[in-house]
Length: 139
Ligand SMILES: [Zn+2]
Ligand SMILES: [Zn+2]
Image (cartoon, rainbow, N blue to C red):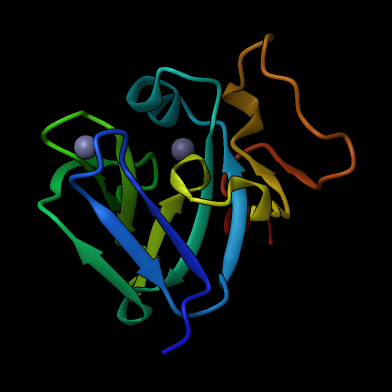
């Protein structure tokens, strides 16, 4: 399998490689992403789970999205870096946080979602489509 994306946590205990193109890339500005990241939004890349190889121990924390669906955020138990997300509403795909990539410049977000809960100090690319909540809810 050809390696297309690779990355890891701050301390290096968790590493990942993906051998497929992302199925979806976007920025999520929801309050859960703000709280879990301590930042304005989550820059997320979704890849087929079976195309991602993870090395190291990952701890997952599960919460419920406003839709009622579960979302598990994966982080390194050594350094606390957030790396992954598993969404009940998107089975079979794994979310990767763009900031953990070895080449973060390869991230190409296609939209902004949950902009209704974005902070006033969260500056977005005006060229990207905006969704007040989940993109699926608005068609
Ligand atoms: Zn780590
Ligand atoms: Zn979010």
